[in-house]
Length: 355
Image (cartoon, rainbow, N blue to C red):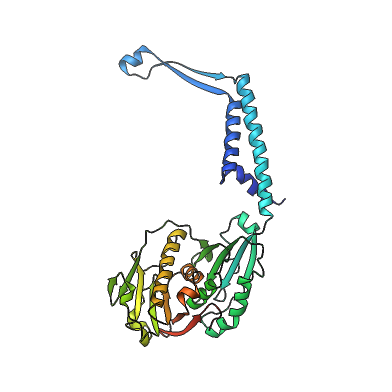
């Protein structure tokens, strides 16, 4: 047993996280308290103090009360039971550590990302249980690079080539918006339960979505006015319709491709525009489910829905993971080039292929 494992087992008792470990700590503490016995401290005040509120003290006495035989029996029982339960905790923990059932999917669509960034904030237990699913980092801002690797990524994720025994997927993805949506779309059709991570550029590491919620809600707008019914937005001759999702930076109507001006629904949050606008798992899931529903509604008005997204990576991956060809049809995701200040290319995703 190495040092890290030993420390982990000690933490089971002194920093319990499950009910069994908490019960173990409670029994051990109760038993040890009983063996200590009881000390009493007594101060006797004189009448002078009582009458004049002076500091006069007649005496101070300290006594020790020895534990009784019954207290000894119960204390030993609690300690013995607590030790047995700790042994059970150790056994269950070692058995748990031996199961490598967490698939850590590292999908880096930018080059020069630290390979260890995805696991830096994982606990010792999680690191011991990881099955690595790695895709070599590349520049996903180049559409040809995505198309070249799409088939391999799809096969690896859907067929679980490297993580057949996994029960949960941890997804640490970073890259262009079309790439992130594509990766998410490969995790549909009954894929593993997912835990998504976002990238902290200041700390150069990925972190789970465990921050407090922001009480965010979705706002739909068209022509600069808030609306409630997406049917107000007209399609372009029934061929296509746009959805601009502005969570990080506002997407302006004038920046859209010409054919989508006047034919795009804008969605944003009531919390304004900021990085990592949805840092809590359940709140993000609720908002993204609403976006998925909006896409399905827009699909009824046109042959194809086109997405323009400014949001944190986990939002885009989650939105892609909700893709259903029967509800959404073919979905096209556009890539924004900040240097050229324009949407320069798009990726078309269906249930069968990417183009």
